[in-house]
Amino acid sequence: MNGLDDFCRQLEAYLCRKNDGHLIRIVGPAFEQVCGWAERGIPLTLAMRGIDRYFERYYSKGPKRRPVRIEFCEADVLDVFDEWRRAVGIAITAGASTADRVREAGASEAVEGGEIGADLSGHRSSLPAHVERVIARLTALRGGRDRSFDPVVDDLVRELDAARAKARTIRGEARDTFIDRLRQLDASMVDALRQQTTQVTLQQLEMEADEELRPFKARMPAGAYEDAHRACVDRLLRERAGLPTIAY
Image (tube, rainbow, N blue to C red):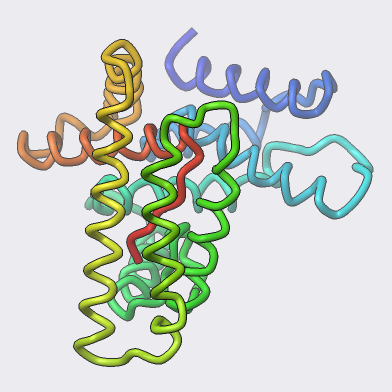
């Protein structure tokens, strides 16, 4: 079995589990579509996360009606991949499709205009809404089974709560300063999380990052790869802990 076949079969098995055991084969046009994901370098874990996102939206509409086909999940898979690329600093390659370039250009314009919030999903979000969402996510984390990170979360919520009113009215240089502070808080949160994570777990996450970045490593300068690898590990740490992105 070659790499593309294995990629498709693993997604087929994953989709089967998501469909409560109902098997829908990835063949014909669907096979070509999924092979296209692999050829773009979309990591298997991100493709699965895109499928998860589709199912979350599907279930939110009420009782399911029929098994989900892999074709329905493509938009979510590509969105997750775009978010991942921007988070770890992977640029569109020379061989990318026109659709990819349009998606990248739109996302870049939104980022430069300060319109993308915590989820980096390309959906426009105001600064006040971003701060409110981050506070809500952090507050929901308090009181869980693992209380070791509570002091860090408490400090973050306290500062963000004090600043939430300011986020509605600040403009110009004051707004830029506040956004820079959000980046600082985000970096300090991830650093604190790293310090509380065991070396064994960090090594596991580094291996996951190696696998996610493998399709891109050969065409990345060493320094860029190191930066992307650290950003990838930080993202995995954040997801593992259920932490939001504070940076705007």
